[in-house]
Length: 77
Image (tube, rainbow, N blue to C red; front, side):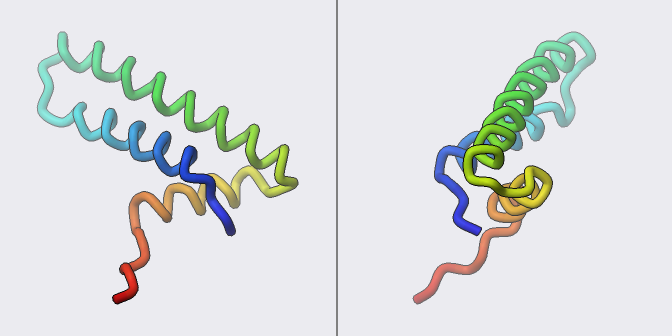
C-alpha cells in the first residue's frame, strides 16, 4: 500500500507526543495528554480522508501507517 509521507509525519508526531507522557507529574500530564490527543485526532482525520479519497479500507490504511512508523522496513543497501 502506498502511504503518503504526510500520513507518516502525522503519525510520527502523534507517537512523539504520546511518548512525552511518560514520567510526567499529574499537572504536566494533563497538558501533555491534550497535545497527544490533538495530534491523534489530526492523524485519524487525515487517515479517514485519504482512505475515502483513495477507495481504501480505513482500518487497513491506519494499520499500514502505524506499521510503517513503528516497525519500518530495513533500508536497502
